[in-house]
Structure formats: structure tokens, C-alpha cells
Length: 117
Length: 113
Image (cartoon, rainbow over all chains, first blue to last red; front, side, top):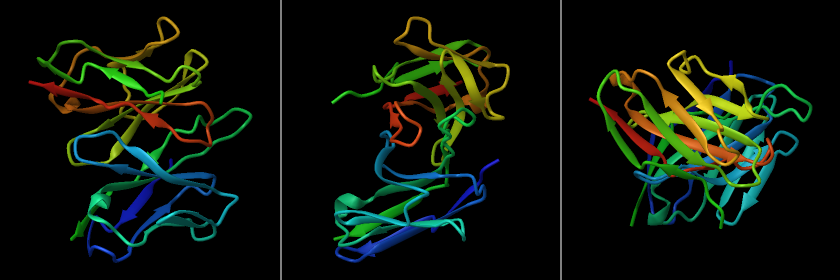
């Protein structure tokens, strides 16, 4: 089955710096890659996602890149702010429009991001 | 904004007891999931549910677990005989398409003593 590796496990940056979190996946059939932010004691919330037919996606200060050949995807946060401090999880899933996998998300182990003012 | 709601927020139970965790997915969603998160660890897939039946389940989802959608709105996870290692946060999630956001509920913290 799918396995997702995520690095680093902790990341500390100064406010205004950039943060990069990297994930690799094992199943070449995976075609949907979301990133979730989880604040302490709260639910995971989607911050950005990318499908396998796209190499890069950006939403304001957040961007995700995907390298299908290397089975690697990364989250980039620019101009970090203290409120970006949280645990970030990458995930991979397979969706097929005509049956088969029902898109269950396989998560990485998470990265605890701390942004120091 | 519609959201997935879960009850209770916290459940304490004795080892060996049955528990039922409840979820109300977003109303027009078709795909439903249960995940669990042991404290400080990653979110782990348990089971997916579509068209009134289980579509996939993980190795964690053994015979002690079952899911139901009894009335078209609620989605429940039952653990028949809880073990200490079942202590975790259990999240329900739903989505209307497989290539779009899965919305998570706020979770039920299960503590088995």
C-alpha cells in the first residue's frame, strides 16, 4: 500500500523567513496530494492541494510543487507569520472516476512548524 | 459554512466496553471516512464508506470495528470491546468528490481506562 514520508519532523524559522516541508510517496498511482494544517487540539484543515496533472499550485503565501517522476511533493510557505505555527501534514490518495480506490488519505508523520516573532 | 460535526467531543470508557462515535457529514457529500490520531502521531486511515457500504479499510479496522449509516444523515463508528490502545482522537471526514477537499470533523477524544 501507499507510504508517505515527511521531513523534517520539526522546523523552526524566524518570522518573515520561508519554510519548506518535503514529502515522498511510494505508490505511483497516487494522484491527489493535499496539505493539512492542524493546530493543537483541533481538526486538520486543508490549506492547499494539488492533482497529478499539475506541477505547481500557489495560493498567496503558500505553494505546493509536485514531481511525479521522483514521487516527491513539497509545501512552501513564504513570509511566515507566528500564526503559521502548527503541525502540517502531507497526504496522498488515489482517485478513480470509475470505481476502485475511494480516495482514502495516507498521511505523513507531520512537521511541527514554529515561527518565532 | 457547512461542517462535519462529531459527538461526543470526549468519551471515557472502561476497557472491554462498547463505544459508538457519531458523525454528521456535510449533507451533499457522498464519501465518508473515519481516521484516528494517537496523541502526537500522524492521522491514520481506518475505513471509507460509499453507497451504503464499506469501500476500503485498513489493517487497524479489525473485527472489533464497524460502521453504519443508519438514517441517511448520521455516520457511526462502533468499537465492540475497547482496548487501552484504542485511546486516540477519532476524526470523521466527508467529501463530495474524490479529488477535492476532505472535510474533517472536530474529533472525538476516546480515552479507554
